Length: 477
Image 1 (tube, rainbow, N blue to C red):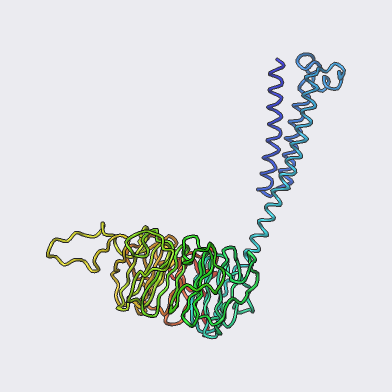
Image 2 (cartoon, rainbow, N blue to C red; image 1 turned 120 degrees about the vertical axis):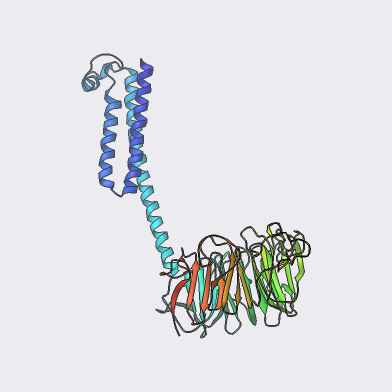
């Protein structure tokens, strides 16, 4: 009998503590601390009364009045009853202390969350107007940018910069901006490159700190730059290309693990450079395209998947290049577009060989002809003037028409949410376009600034829901 009495009493102890524990949680969630607090107190008193007064004077048998048994015959209380009484007090007091601290902890967590949300809201920029004609548009990770002809920089989303005035501009005298993760490159109109943000991967030359709070001068006489979360590229007016960052996949073309010095020259006579997370590409003045780094999906079009630790020529006769995550696009001088690499989301813009129809001997083969895996194949596009790619999505500008294909899970192609394995027309009157990981910007012929895709960080403006191309901000020129 003593065994069962002890077992039942222990179960009552756990019941009391459990009630107090969940009462504190409910109080924190519901925000009704007084009401739920009183309920918890009553439950605690109820449990305390049960575990302390049910045992009678002998602990098992005797008078049935628990109060009289507890207080009227203290001298005759059995050791079992004393143990139960002491344990009950300890457990209930401990449970109450636990509940109090738990409630305080939940309140602090809730307060910290509110502070974090407030700070993040401050970091979100959503200017409703752009004062001046837009000269360039740029996409970053969680942020988008527009630069006016006067050099004023506007940003939307998690820009990491504060507005200079009521107009919402965040910087002046800017020519171009690149953003990857928490790192930002700014190219000024006088050719000076500035940088700030995360420097854990040695993306900001001359800086040893893991995070650079304010913009610092990196280099002068800069023509262009490119940036990913692992590597940065600086193209000088002389055509010399310099690289910085980490060399995990050999994308810096050096033996060193890290290269954080702009004196590290990779190539010369370069006209354009593109950097991804694992590979680097550049276009030379004679139309040759070179790649270095990861080739795991055959994105270099060499017919193999071997890492290229030194720049290798992958195409020629080209006027533009673009690259996303493990795939490459080149624009030939005749206006044709060719692609190579990963096609898991249709980002190559062409059907793989195994899905193409079989033609009998003598029949006219499809144009373009199928390409073997790991090599460049031609898309069914002609007279293209510019190409763009980011993540697993690609675009081509054909005059004023914009075509897109590949990954479309957030509607970055401007319609629907399904992937497009072949190019589809997404806009008819575009002057410029910019591709981000999950969103797309278009500058129309009329000077309007449009965006589609991921707008969770307000990178498409406060009014734009990302469902189809909508206006990000009013452009007042």
